[in-house]
Amino acid sequence: MTSFDSLWESILDVGREPATGGYRRFAWSSADLTLREWFTAEAQGRGMTVEEDRNGNMWAWWMPAGWSGDPRGAFVTGSHLDSVPDGGAFDGPLGVVSAFQAVDIVRARGVAPVIPIAVVAFTDEEGARFGVACVGSQLSTGALTADRALALRDNDGTTLADALRDAGRRPEQLGPDDTLTDRVGVYVELHVEQGRALADLGRPLAVASSIWPHGRWHLTFGGEANHAGTTRLVDRRDPMLPFASAVHAARIEAARHASVATFGKVRVSPNGANAIPSRVDAWLDARAADEATLAAVVEAIRHAAAQYASDGHVSLDFDAESITPIVEFPDAPRLRLQAALSRFGEVPVLPTAAGHDAGILSAKVPTAMLFVRNPTGVSHSPEEYAEIADCRTGAEALADVMADWVSR
Ligand SMILES: [Zn+2]
Image (cartoon, rainbow, N blue to C red; front, side, top):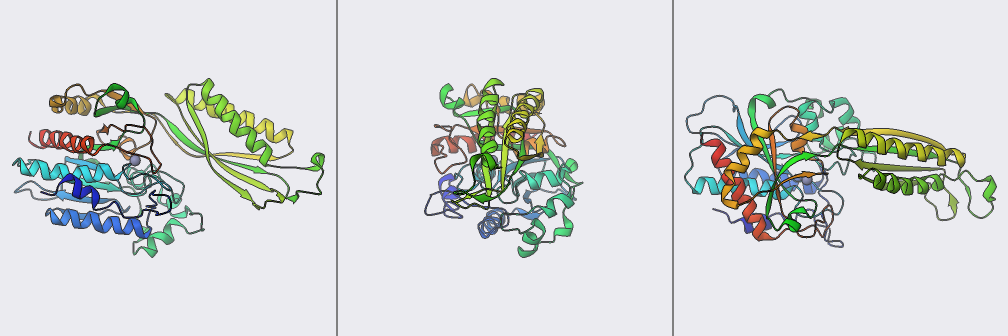
């Protein structure tokens, strides 16, 4: 049996940026393709059948002895292998590595599954390259249409369709996966915690209660390019000013609504140090405990941004790029997970403000999540961390859940 540590270390160099220590594992990049080869090798090394579905999601199947025909009602576990720009090592890969490790542990215990088991790696969860998160799971559930996905462009202007073609895939295959509801009996995603709740509670593991509703909005402030030296202040139509005010408004409104709102990406045109910009494109990420609060905080930010734009004689477009409703994980799988984890003592039930493929899939199949303690709470950063002992505990816990589920 491969140890957790050696399995974990086997991907630590892939897509790592030496200058920052962070990961740049973007969808269909060479790092992504290397990780797909790693996934295939790990699956084949375990005698699992590997399949890349029509949307690029990777599946590794362990079928019960004597099973004939297509998989049905499987216990599916995994996560994603891609990262945000200069992301950490754990967000995503911990769930895939733990899934393979859980398979090893369950086998070493001599469990003979009576229902199929799959390890899955969903494609492009972070949306770092093409701007839309959970592309693979959203395509499979039908939440994202193939036409919209194929037209997405990265910062170099490459469409997803071209990126797929360059990677030797067939973009015309993209679309809803009609086999999903038959094949997946439950999807359990193990993930590094993206907060400090478990550290505060002194517990290594949690199960998820819900995912906050969240979304991304694209703001375009349109002004007039001009000389930074010769243009009088009163004559300027400078889109940077209402943008800056909107950033402050987002912070104020988020605090007022007990939610979070962030401008983390901005593009300035023409981006010259001595030129008043003609245009500022900015992306707002907002999340709240419920959908009414999310709508209220985004409307308040939109209202403030429109007022600042109007005061500065600047145009404003405010478009929703994606809005993900609240996900309440169903009681039945969660209660069964908690019962299977009784040897780990109290396992807290926590909400998360981060999106996950498990949230997308929950529209079609039963889902549950396990979180592994993150001592600092930092995520989407090279500083993201979990103790290796907690990671091993997570894999053991996932193995207990798997063994319980497939032995009925
Ligand atoms: Zn993740």
